[in-house]
Image 1: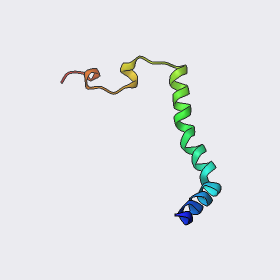
Image 2: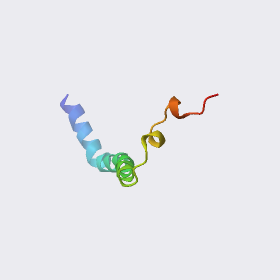
Image 3: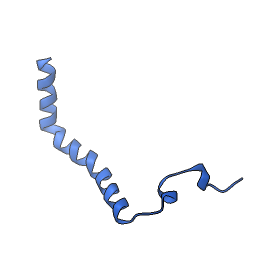
Length: 54
């Protein structure tokens, strides 16, 4: 168990900051964009109700 924790800690030290940065940057930008340019819900959430009747 301690070996796994040490291995995980080494991975975090080597790659953790990159993973955290690149995995959190797009969602953070997306949330900020949605807050800044708020669109009606019909444009932001896909729904069958918004599709034209066939």
